[in-house]
Length: 455
Image 1 (cartoon, rainbow, N blue to C red):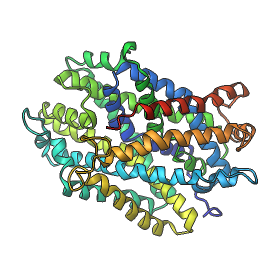
Image 2 (image 1 turned 180 degrees about the vertical axis):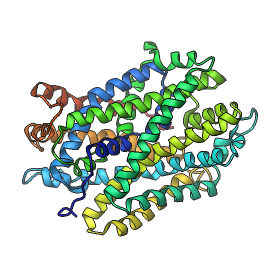
Image 3 (image 1 turned 30 degrees about the horizontal axis):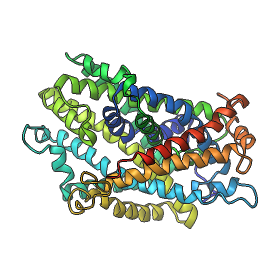
Image 4 (image 1 turned 180 degrees about the horizontal axis):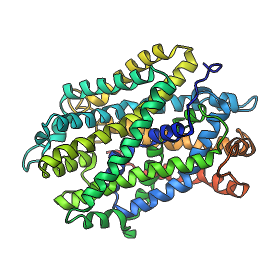
């Protein structure tokens, strides 16, 4: 695979594809959910700081390693390490992390597709939250048949597109999806912002309450930053291996983070004013997006039918952009290990992801007796714990050590690769800042484990 490595067709394709990997359920489902549960504006402020001080250095390093190695993360460390070094164990983190992520992300994407279909077919009245009745979101996640069918559609769609190759499949589809997504978000945020009562939602979301910024909020903000950028498990490194050396990598990382942050902030500008308008809770957990937006659109009459269809269409685009990008990473790693063709790799990887994701799809029905972290938890929480709480920060920790320490690739090698081409450069004065990143990550990671609600 290495000798005939595929390439992206354009710089725009690289930026939108990398941003597409970052932009997804992490922005429009998990970000508002986590912000609502952690005090709103204060969490958003810390999240933005984490993106700048932690996310930007790690993303730049991942891109640099991928471009220098010209291979997938499963062989990246072996190619860049010095003789006698043993950094290859990270390969397991990369493959496990991407696979674990898709073990619940594909199911959540299926939920979004289900809501889109309900609005498209005019059956969205079924999604209305009614007092003293079980929320439609709960009805959906406890229906095994719905979950398995929509999971299968997402997996087949994702690996089916990847069968067509990098430029004809992944790059072409993602570019169109991302551009439509941005247009839809802007339109919806303007519409909801003009409704009476939206101001309270803006206040909660944009005005920090410093009294609510606790160590737990800081840990949540760091984990969300890594989750939304898909950092630490090689998801960005793979796209670095597909691009040339015409642009410096810190500049490209800035562009992608700005685009990713724009979508996350816009999601909040849609959801929290909508909650305020309708008197809904902002800390409603995983059902926040689904329950809130379904109620909002139901109250709009005929206009709500089409606006709801467009909203969940954009959600499908956001989710699929990440599914495609992460599945491409899994596919590239498996092909590097086995030498399989793209179609064969798509078939095997698709079957494997589907089987693992069945644990999440059935986690609220057939496998509903499994509670890893107390009575309200399920397989989704276990997979999320493995990825968000552990593999993303630990993987980022390894990447930063490898790129800044002499016992790894080293600062000079990293800087030389990152600075090739036009754009923002990595400077030597930044080295202490980059070297401080693992200390911060490790401290927050340990605190997060100590304070994690195990029961």
